[in-house]
Image (tube, rainbow, N blue to C red; front, side, top):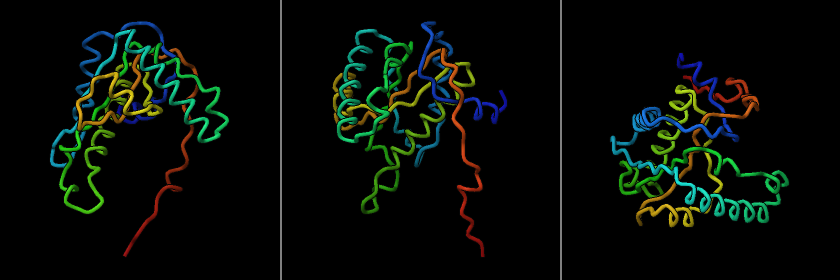
Length: 191
């Protein structure tokens, strides 16, 4: 696919086929994620791939609890009936783990040290685009209790689970959401 075709084709998939993803396709998608930019080329990301049903069930149960807690605290009506079944359906869940010790020069400025998080977000975006290019559906998921999932996944102390990405062949025909005109998002500062 042409680059802008990939950008336009990418969307969040919340229903997956049970078709396994070939190993070479997963490797290519992760290679795309690994090509993300990072401060000082510190590459502060790690990827935890979950294909085991028992682990997916534990993740699903934890995320159900997190969703209920968020619903109770927020009062957002849409969140009550929101289903996270895709966590069980997706053939692969990818945990994106950030290492704060691998941030850039931002660590030397008061109140800063988030460069590693931005780099991991860039890795997630690359992963989503590489998945789209490979014909996979994906979902960037963040409705979870970080500490609980870090314990389930065995994430080393000092590192942070920043995102989960669900990967698989999409079985969801929901159209891509619309975007506002870019001119509504731009402020020009000129001389």
